[in-house]
Amino acid sequence: MPEWGAQSFQAAWFQDQQSVDLGHFFEKIVGAKPDAVTQQSVGVSVAVGNDGKTQYRCHMQPGRLDYFEALVPGPGNAFPLFVPPEEYLPIFVDRAMKAEVGNVARLALVSNLFKPIPSDGNITEEMKAALGLRFPFEGGSDLFLQINRPMAFPSKPDLQMNRLLKFQGQSFQSIQLDAGAPIITTAQFVTLEVDLNLPATPGLSFPPSDQALIWNDLKTEAMRLCAARTLAALA
Image 1: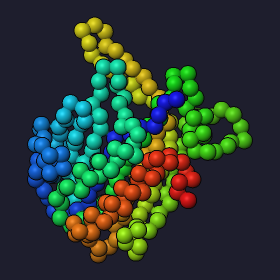
Image 2: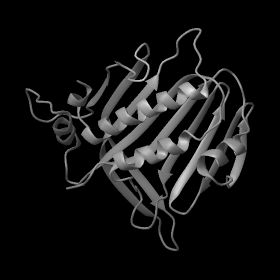
Image 3: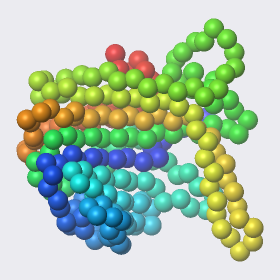
């Protein structure tokens, strides 16, 4: 049976309008200098690098920093996944926690989970099974479900953690250029986006000491939801 895996992980810091050196930000997290830092427009920059196995990317725009990790595609594996996702997630978060960003208004942790579906499989039926849903009919397509069920942060019970789950079916194509004709690979997946975040509270900002507690709470809950991969886990 195909396994669930993580296509990518993302951490986000919503700042109090303070800028950082993106190359230094990348180096603090990854432990190496980026391969390239590019300014895309006024106030928007990207730093990228990879170690042959994992792709690292940092993105900066006014008031926000993002850090992403994904595996490097290779021959015969156009859609590589971190398997199992709940084991790779804490490694990612521990890396992200090395960032030096000053005070923040919000934090977010996003895990994009994929389950490969055989080419002759039915995405809708696979989604219904993953969701634990029964419909009063057979067939159907374009099933999408999004739900948020907040909870209190264990370390800070006065703050709410948004727990947003998005289930949907998706198809992707990958094109590999070779000496001959291009090789086109098509794959279909049931996907689950686990988006955990600290919503903004007017007048509140969080120093690094508070951020460490919040990141650990986000990590613990994300690991649980990534392992469960069901709606019932929000109960």
